Image (cartoon, rainbow, N blue to C red):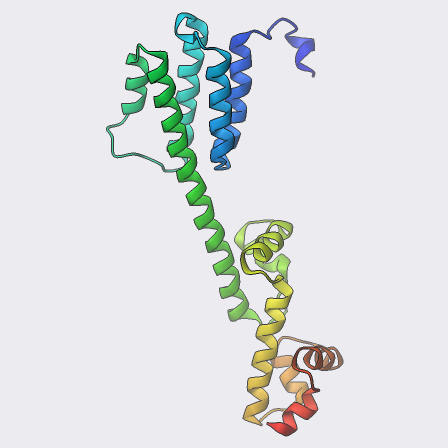
Length: 225
């Protein structure tokens, strides 16, 4: 249903802050520091006399309680005693000081979440490389790895490209070709055997791919080796 159908007269100042709070929480969970600070600044600029407006004042306190909940859910805790910031907010008598406390608290939490997300991204890419190195000789695909890492193939593909500068399939191919070259230098296997051992099931496709990346055919490389 549309909000106007069930609450046509609810658009008051308190409701507006609730909407801003929703945006703030989403930005906070995404670790978007600048967006969080912009939203907070907009709230305090829009209601400069909020300390005299009891309903607005309480809405801001409720907003900060929601912010602390996000921090707790993300494992972020300061060196202060539990409830330290909420006590400061509840006891604050100055609008300027309250704005400063809220802004700094939100900045701290957003920065911490941002750092955690970057760390997690690094771990996903690192784990992807580990899986490639462990299973390149199998029938490995982007879908297989994304399922194991509990992310979508589209997200993993974009993330891997952004973090490493190369596509997932290019990395997988590179590892396979290097392994194939190593086997050829050993001189114990045929090209067909090396094709299968390197993770490919079509010798013709393997030969074309090998020549594309190495510059010569597997047969010529094997002779040189």
